[in-house]
Image (cartoon, rainbow, N blue to C red):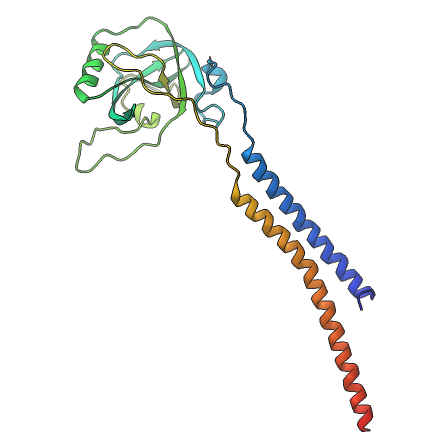
Length: 254
C-alpha cells in the first residue's frame, strides 16, 4: 500500500509540510537563543549625545543607559519639581531642568532632595543665580517616561514622571525647536541637592521561553504531518482488506 504512487505522492507532501514546520521551529529556536545573547555595551564610557541618539525620534534599546556628554547652556526658569522619586531607598524629589544645545533641547534631572522644601529652595537658587555660561554636561541617557494623570484628590500640578512631552509645555520660551524624547540624569548635582542614583543598567541574559515553546510546537506539528500520512495509509489498507473479506463472504454464500 505504501509504495503505491498515490501514497508515495502523499508521503512526499507530508515530508514537505514537515520540513516547513521544522524550519519554522528552527527559526523560533534561533530567536530564543538570540534573545539570550549578551550584547557587550560600554555604557560607562561617555559618548557625545549626538552620536547616541537624535532629537525628535525614538530611543533605541542600546542607547538607553549610556553615559553621554553634551555641550550647551541651562535655561533659567525652566526648573520643574518631580515628586515620589526614590534615591538610595528613600522617597524624595527630583529637580529637572531644561538644557539647550546648539540645535536641540533635553530635560536633565539635576539632583534629588529628601523633602519638598529643600527641592524648592534649590530651584529658587537656580532661578535667582542662573548660570548662563556654556557647560559640558555628563550624565546617563534614559528613555523618557510616559506622562501620568494627576491624582484627582491631590495637587493637579504635581508631576511624578520625567515626561518630555509634558515638560515642554512648562518651559517658558520653548517654541518648536527639536527636543529629545529622553532625559539625562546628571552625574553631578548643584548646591542643595544630592546626586541622583544612576546604576549601571542590568543586562537581560534570560532566554525567551515563549519562543522555545513555539519551537517545540512546530516540531510536534512536523511529526504529526508524517503520522497523519501513516494513519491514512493504514486506514486505506484496512478498508481494502475489509472489502476483500466482504467480497469473499459474498462469494462463499453464492
